Length: 58
Image (cartoon, rainbow, N blue to C red; front, top):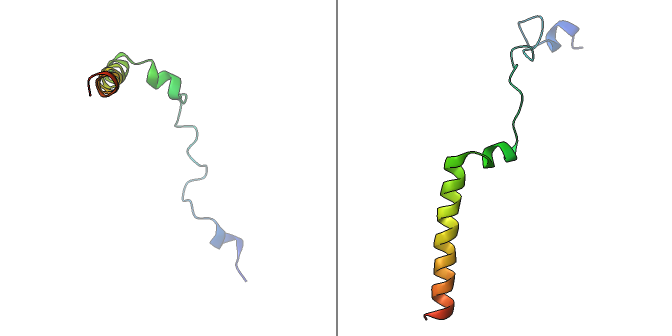
């Protein structure tokens, strides 16, 4: 039989959730960053220009 002392795998008395004090930030925080928004705007403009070129020039 497996004793209770074999089930304990951590060496510390408590797990480490106290160390994490920074709150989690989601996708909306990432999208609010100016460099990411500039990058996405440039990619969006390039895709839009390619679509307009394909539709009206070719």
